[in-house]
Amino acid sequence: MPTTKTSLFASLLRTVADWASAPHGTPKPSARAERRRRARQRLKARATLADLYQTAAENLGAQVDALRQMVDGLNADRERLQQQIQIHHECMEDLGRRNAYLLDQCATSQHEAEHWKRFAEGERAQEAEIARKLQLN
Image (cartoon, rainbow, N blue to C red; front, top):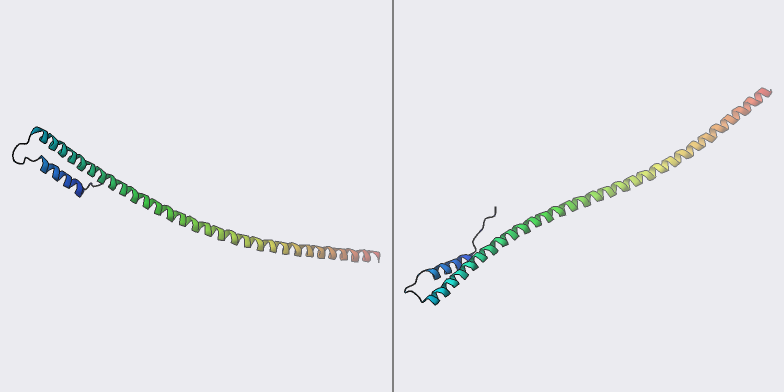
């Protein structure tokens, strides 16, 4: 609950209104008394307005502080997310390098497998040729 402080201006206006409403010497004519009464009312209304504006200014100040804190929090979240994005980009680059390495290893292994397959087929062909020659003899 916000504490309302009476502004110095409002206090001064109230003091002047109280002084103006106090009896000072002899009674005044009624027209003058009415003017003074209206002047006192205006001073009191101004003091009330000053208090209202003071309260509104305090409320706005609190709202500004809350908004600043929210902006600070959002900026911190944005920085954290930017760091996470940077980490994810680095991970993707690393995965890309690993993928390229594995593709290279796969191609090398496939090349070697084809070589050994041809070698095995050649060996089988030689064995078949030797077996055929042995059968002829």
